[in-house]
Image (cartoon, rainbow, N blue to C red; front, top):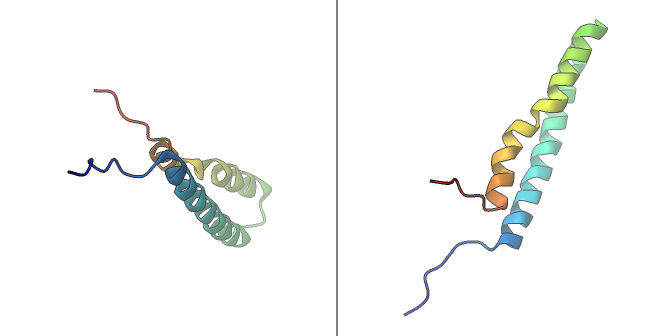
Amino acid sequence: MDAPRKGLSLPVRRAIACAGILVFVIVYIMVASDIGRHLPGNPLIQLLFYALAGTLWGVPVIPLISWSEAYRRRK
């Protein structure tokens, strides 16, 4: 009998995650900059928008990084 398949190896997971993060960040930057062009000229509004946009990109990336490093929740 064949050994049970364990899934993707760690280097393959990291490569997939790297490509996924790269594509996501490029699209995110394009969308954020497009939205930023339509903001009013008020510097405070622009500061708040770009501060939020500059930090919120990490939220959807965290699960992808966790998956790529094969983290498992403790029971």
